[in-house]
Image 1: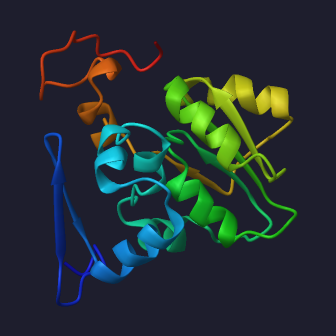
Image 2: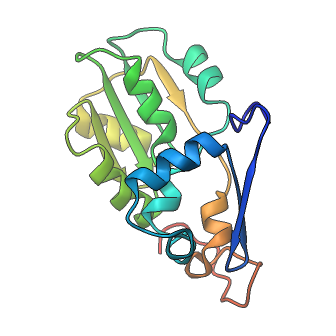
Length: 178
């Protein structure tokens, strides 16, 4: 409950095989800024709206433990939808640098838009295993911190096109780099 920023009251919404639990105040703010009804949002739940409302796990803890040099160079090997890197950037100054990789093209496309105005982050559609080659290209000799949030995301399980879902009838592909 604390993780979801819910203190007392909850708002439970359901549409199209999906249930959302919201803090009522956050939902009211969302309604003020959205042109879509909840049903329309539920239909697009696998699109950018879902990605934007993703809450990364242990965000504050990972930032506190990783970001020790505010002007440092960091590597995010599993960029995903940019939650951790966004928070890292909030704690870094203009002399810092993040090199980020992800094999999921949907995540890359989303993050290229998300970070389009920030020169401190460079995004590669690649595996974190390419860290050595990417570092050579970028002229980086070492990192102040390396981050990887390994595993499959709920977005990939929820999206029938991802090749990872078992929640509905869909082809299993199990490759990140489609």
